[in-house]
Image 1 (cartoon, one colour):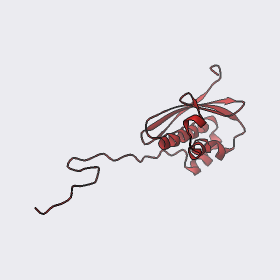
Image 2 (tube, rainbow, N blue to C red; image 1 turned 60 degrees about the horizontal axis):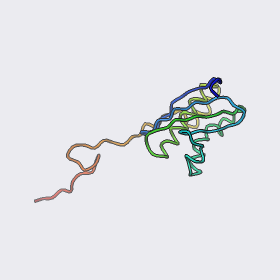
Image 3 (cartoon, helix red, strand yellow; image 1 turned 30 degrees about the vertical axis):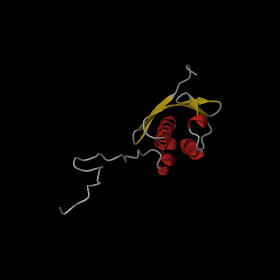
Image 4 (cartoon, rainbow, N blue to C red; image 1 turned 180 degrees about the vertical axis):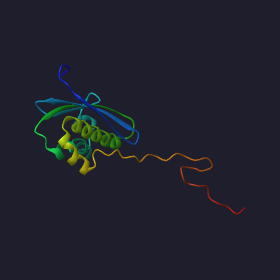
Amino acid sequence: MADKKYIAAIGRRKNATAQVRITPDSKRTFVINDRKIDEYFTVEELRKVVQSPFALVETKDDFHVSILVKGGGISAQADAIRHGIARALEKYNEELRSPLKAAGYLKRDPRRKERKKPGLRKARKRPAWSKR
């Protein structure tokens, strides 16, 4: 595996960051933080999210996908991995850009947790007003 050339990309969502490497291979395999995809994502819905860029473009080539993901929750990590895989596929073949872009896989979702402000209990929650 070390002698084959890989394509690297980074995907992000909230506080999750995924470093994705795809290598052309004979069959599609996923390794996430040195674990198989079934061990890392126990929920079937999240596995579908991670594999959705490949299902969308229906590329004839299969890839070995190696991922290092950290930060955020499990759902944000799945979205970050999807973003990284889509960016790597775009680098692999420019013709895949339009279907990936139309599906929204190349757009980084910018929503983050809003910071807490002084004098408030949370970002926007205020203490109850009392007349006296």
